Amino acid sequence: MSMDFVTSKSHWFASISLVVLGIIFESGWPTYHYTIHDGPVVLWYFALSGVMAATLIFLRPIALKPLLKEPLFYWYVVYSITGLLWLIWLDDGYLDPDNQNWRQRFLLFLFFAICLVLVSAANFRRFVEVLFGCALFATVSYWVDFINPFLYVPADMDQSNPGRAAGWYIDANQAGSTLVLMCIAAMPFFAMRWRVLLSLIMLIGVFPTFSRSSIVFAGLVMAVWVWRGQFSKKAFLALILVIPLGVAIGSALFTQGADSDEIDHEDITNRLGFFQQMGEADDNSAIERRYVSELAWKKFMENPLGLGPGKADPGKADSVKSWGYSASTHNMYLLLLVEQGLFGGILYLAFLSIIYYKGIRLYRRGLSRQECDIGMALVLVAIYFSFFGFFSHTLLREPHVVLILAFLLAAEHRAIAGRTRSMLTETLSAEAIVAMEDHRRG
Image 1 (cartoon, rainbow, N blue to C red):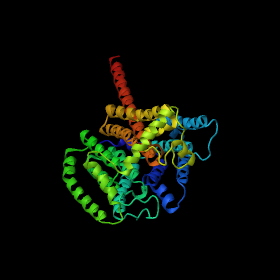
Image 2: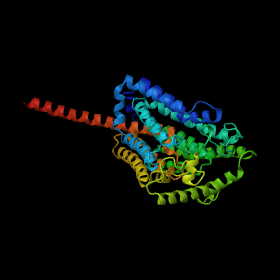
Image 3: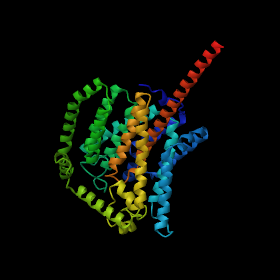
Image 4: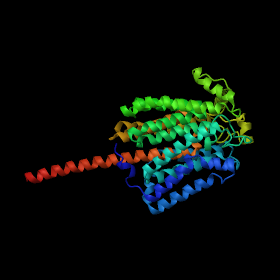
């Protein structure tokens, strides 16, 4: 497998910066440190990334070029600006200083731009090593968290959820989905013989989160990998032989954790029953999700232009009043429909379409196996946003997701640029041969 374009034209400062940001955000440390240990606000980490990007642009101004060529950059521009305009328009020109939603949109827009600038000039191999390290760390920490329920989050804190492991991510659903996403992004850069290890890390690590959506998605990703030949025959055979060992280890760890009186056995039983009942769920979480989905659709039908960004945020009294419930939509599609009406729904579909198009195009036109695998990874990322869009309303706010998205987009850019150079070289070589033949005949 060719890895030449992975390190081509990389800048040392961009590579170091990307490694630092990867360790910080992909581990889930900023939110955990702030929430559990009263550490610095997450905004300081965003400021650090901004300083890194500004330094790189000073050292290498051409680093801005990939950013200006990326369609999703302009999508984020529209997403952030329309959020502000919608808020002012629906509130008759009044901008509520307590509404943080539009600020979050601008912040994530800037962070996406920062990540794309840094990643486009970095050594991909180093970032893949960070992704693998964070995925391995996540798997170990999830099982440690399951066996020791209050090790990461003390029992007296609201975020405590004994029995559902999350490590530094605190939220088990986010922990499970992030682990799968890290493995998706790292897979194209792994040699065939080592992809089994990455798959096992994903499958073993996602289980103790007991996130139904994450476990289902991990199974879907695994099926796509097998279907599209992401493993060599020997590696696939090894995977089949190793799976029973993984199941045995997981069962032993699960039994050890389940013996604890500190975990919520009823919740775990209900979540496992979801798979036994072929997708039917009637626990409190499922009931709440169905209720807010119905409420969101009702609000959209009553207000087809939307209520305004942040109006479905349960953290604000004004939002609870206009929204009507203490929890948000748990759904990305419905959240944007509630906030920005039909335009919001179209906006999210445009976001998905851009990623799908880029992934399918590279997968079909890639000149090497690795380029096709990067295209497949982008398609799986698009499926990630499509699938989890039905279960989460925070996908566009999560910096670790934005960083991985920027990484794969930069990989796609570099693959296409390499293909263009290769085709140009072949064209020039052919023209040179023709010129030599003409010279000889003359």
